Structures are given as structure tokens and as C-alpha cells.
Length: 102
Picture 1 (cartoon, rainbow, N blue to C red):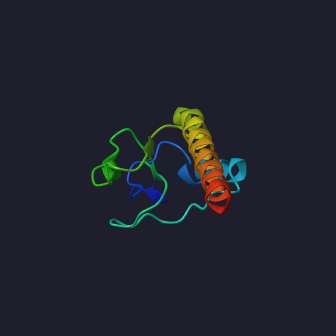
Picture 2: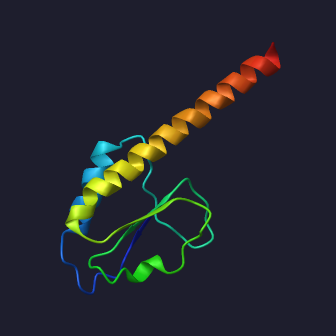
Picture 3: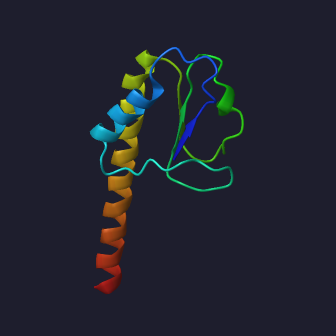
């Protein structure tokens, strides 16, 4: 899920940064974050280091706050880890099904 700040003091092109992540991870769905919704992770895109919208996100799902252009590399690593976890979960589900059917 994706959440942008209000854009009152952007120091970099937030949309371009997110588009870069979308190209790198085409299998992920970057839908808007709505409080109370559940997803596998939340990307909060802040235009500056004040990180205003990072205040009210759930503590029980992975969250990454991108607040500088330099944090794009860290966001990439964050999503690589999400992809690894999803793959592990899918594999575990396949194995459980195989043993349950057998």
C-alpha cells in the first residue's frame, strides 16, 4: 500500500521515485493506503525529513518511510525482502497442500 505526504515541502520528485519502484517490482500492487486497511506492507512517501504521514500506520505490518532521494535504495531493499517473504509464504503453502493431500 502507498501513502504520500501532503507535498507542502517536497525536496525531490516523489512520484518519479515511486514510479522507479513500480518498474522494479511490477508484481507488487501499489494501491493507496487507507487507515484500517490490511496489506503486506506500507510505503510512506514523504517529500522531506519531517515525515509527517508516518504517524498513524499499523505497527503489525512492515512499513518503510522514504523521505529523501537517497532512501530509494533502502526502499528497493525493503521490497526485495517483501518479495522474499512472499515467496517463502507461497512455498510453505504449496508444501502444506502437498502433505495434506498426500
